[in-house]
Image (cartoon, rainbow, N blue to C red; front, side, top):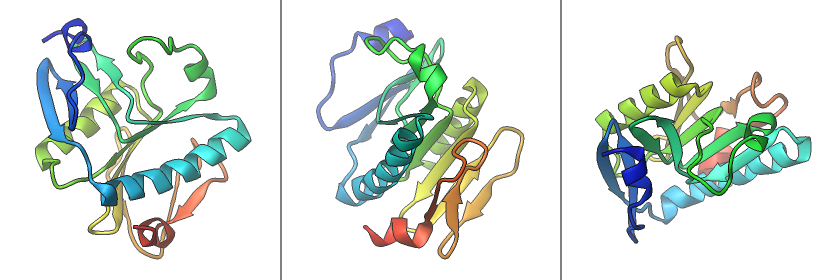
Length: 175
């Protein structure tokens, strides 16, 4: 399936539909536990980005990563200059600088691994995979090994979000 054909599909209530290398990928809509973690992280990032005028934090937007791939990260950060150039009325053709996936029971390990590769290959600087049940965050950057952060540590991205951090205990306690 092409991106144009994907873009013409009707929305499917209760399902998250993505396009991965020309194939449709459908997952069930997340539950409250997932959304609480996503929203707390998104509000912290969003407030910081807005106050510092460095970019935009977006919840579950379709991003065209290549000619046959459209992914919907749970959260994404796009730097101000890049977001200003995006056509907000069409499928987002700007790649998120930071893509965040909050793992749900409906996610498969193979699809998560593929998403990480797709985000990084398309130009994302960082991918965070948040594991609420394990209270851990896996941090991926191009060409680097995965970094794992857990309880009593902070989540940050100094090169992309200078001065922002969030204690993981605080993030996970909210759920």
